Length: 98
Image (cartoon, rainbow, N blue to C red; front, top):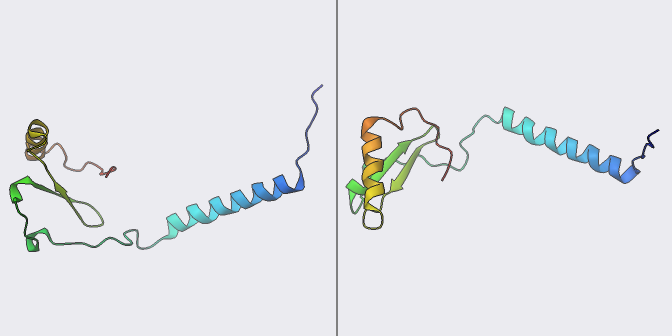
């Protein structure tokens, strides 16, 4: 026979509070109209870069992500990245890490 352990009142209140916060949080994510808050959409053609050959521009849903490449630090990785961009490997791929 198993013995049931009753929750204390404070544990019940805490559980209800956590559930309430989770509902509010996920509800706000679903109903948020502008999912691109605090993101400015810069036009990369209007920005002057020191070395434009070492810049990659990712067109994301909320705006452009400008990626600066460092061939002096990692030349093989930069060349491989440029090759993959030109071959279309990154087309329609989700951008998930900064």
